[in-house]
Image 1: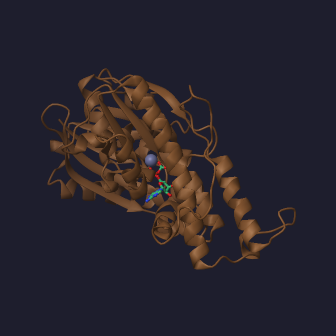
Image 2: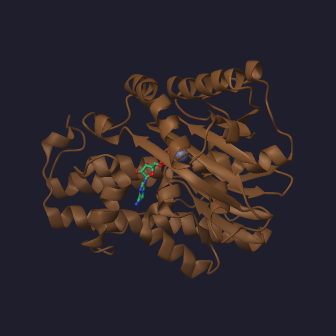
Image 3: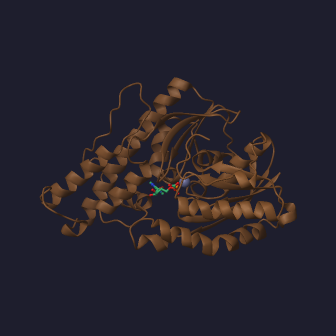
Amino acid sequence: MKILAIESSCDETAAAVVESASNTKAKLLSNVISSQVEIHAQFGGVVPEVAARSHIEVIIPVIEQALKEAHSNWDDIDTIAVTRGPGLIGSLIIGVMTAKTLAISKNKPLIGVNHIWAHAFAAFLTDNQPSFPFLALTVSGGHTTLSLYEQSLSRKIIGETLDDAAGEAFDKVAKLLGLPYPGGPAISAAAENGNEDAYNFPTANLGKDSFDFSFSGLKTAVLRQVLEITGVNPGAKYTQKSYRLDEQTVNDLAASFQKAAVKALVKQTQKAYLQFQPKSVVVGGGVACNSYLRTKLTQSIPGAIFVPPVLCTDNAAMIGALALQMAEKDLFTKPQNLLADSSLYII
Ligand code: KG4
Ligand code: ZN
């Protein structure tokens, strides 16, 4: 089975060709990603209208490039897969409409894929295959979930963020510190030269039975610390231009924030691991690129499987990896029934 997969849920236009290998393993034949990061960086975050228009411009060339790099043509493709949600509705519609049109015109079966599920299934593209049932920590710009996945492709969400997603917290704190978008890599780089014990930031305590996350208190604590250091009156009207932080202070704040955010992620994941005793633990999504998280989580759960960084941030290979397993279970959709769903949750 060879699948052409398409992803356009946020600010990356991506296409990939994946093929089933032995057992659950998926072989990656091509993985083309056209990122809009530079376009959105000047606005300090993703502008949905701009994102949708950029997808229209590049989606066909990106698909053609993915086929070319996979040394494949349409006759070699058995199925088309596409992200149907969650994400920005204007962005999703471009991918879904493109996939539906191609499925009809090339006469191929179609699979609609949940983007959040797919982040964890990127692990099936590597040599280190997860075993079912597995626990997945999915940490991205829009979502933070702890889920249990069964071989039957049923998924139980056992914990999620009550407010900001982990990546969103990195992005917002980076903005506060005057670091560029996207904030995760910028915080991680600044933290390398910072003292993680310089400031004592809190991690949310949501009770011993909870596997949820909360990052808004941590974000507010960083803001309060910044205002205290710079002497800006919290009651006054201020913007990031009202204060200036020196480089070492930024590095120390970044390292201390990262320590608290990662502590929360590790604590809840380890608690879930001990309670549910899954066969594997998988960590995926953009924040899983973070090397401090990789180190700390591996110390707590030595066999944890991290999706490789290139497959952590948004890509179509992960959509194809999940679609291969969906195809085995006949989870195809008629093109006329496939709709983009910006708040797609469970399936
Ligand atoms: O999975 P992703 O590409 O997009 C969504 O589905 O949201 O994740 C993007 C998020 C951004 O918030 C970005 O700041 C964060 O992943 N990120 C990181 C790192 N690299 C990307 N966060 C922390 N450390 C990193 N090294
Ligand atoms: Zn994502």
